[in-house]
Image (cartoon, rainbow, N blue to C red; front, top):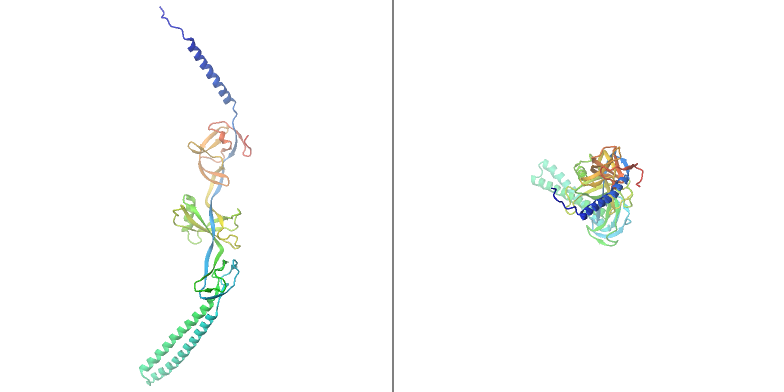
Length: 382
């Protein structure tokens, strides 16, 4: 006898049937969309091989190569200023004139003292000649001879003192004409004409503009810059010349090339940077002390490296990546090691071979293994 089984509830049967229909209806549009979706348009560009100069640009300020304070070396009345304030002067050119009369009198007095000492020396010399002659004939004693010799030597010493006094007076008289110690641009006079100045009083300042110094800071974390700085610091003489170029405040390039001649041996703790200095010729005084400029250095020269457009790299789960398209127009994600950017091109240190076609535009819509619709490098995205 067959056991009795109750019939399957009709409500359950209808619920199961409704669920299956719903799943079929839901999946049908998705499948249709995936089947009908066209490959995304992309622009391709082959990876190229080139040599690249890695540059660094640093903000700096111009300073005169020498800044000298012009001070009075003798005291007196400042009678005349002999230069136009702000103009360029040459070394040895007269800048001020201090009253000369007291120093002319002092020179005359010193010369008179010298003449007096010369007369005393002449007399002592004649006396020595006479006494020494008599002593040779045993006509005078040893004591008289020694006295005559001492008087002669004393007169010679006094003559030396008088000559030194003349030289000192002549030098002080020459100091009344205040001359430029270096070639450069003058600043405003500190004291006006007619002022009483003392020895050491500041009169003006001269700044040497040619050559011009540019001081800037090298970042602590830039390894390439640090290597350049060490090379420039330890090089002796002209055996190593680390060249620099200059960009002016108006955006133009300075026509002269400079040289990095100094880098500090310590890192500034407040800024984490290394102070450096570049020297540039400035014959036309185009660069003015205090001017804000940018120093450009060639940090590294990379020979025969792979370069692509700087926009090709994106960030993936494992780091930077690019999309390489094969002959079947299938895009493959490729992890790469990025180098520096130079003139709109990115250096790829590892992960990419020369000639491989890289997606340069449209890679936002691309995924690994996706078929794409490639165009040439001059085409635009649709």
